[in-house]
Length: 122
Image 1 (cartoon, rainbow, N blue to C red):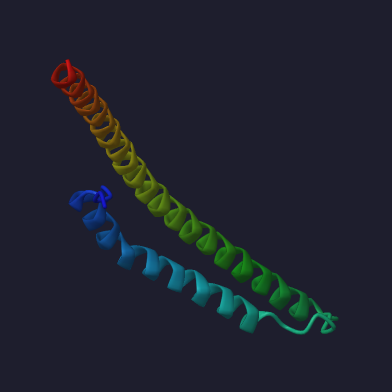
Image 2: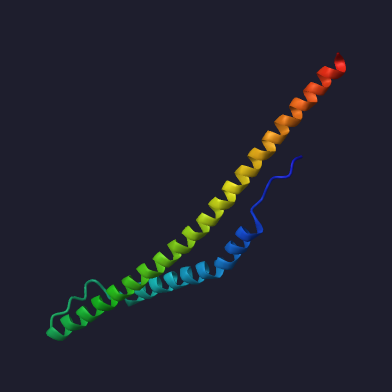
């Protein structure tokens, strides 16, 4: 059975090196989502005083800031995954080129083999 061409060592090292970044970013996103859920007050608790409205505004501001942080973390995660995707695409392109070269070599070898059989038969 023919050996399947694998990813290059550089691509594997890049993926392995970026795993901690992805895990850390994902963990921060999960933590932010949990904190947002814990920070959310009961929807039926409508403030009736100016101080209550001010507190509600502060809560909304905190929520918007947390959403902004979450967006930044998501962008970082997407960028890292896109970078990994680019490395994998390059590796796949290189592997496809190597397979094409092997196919050409195999076809040439088959043609020479067929020619040798024809010449040996005559």
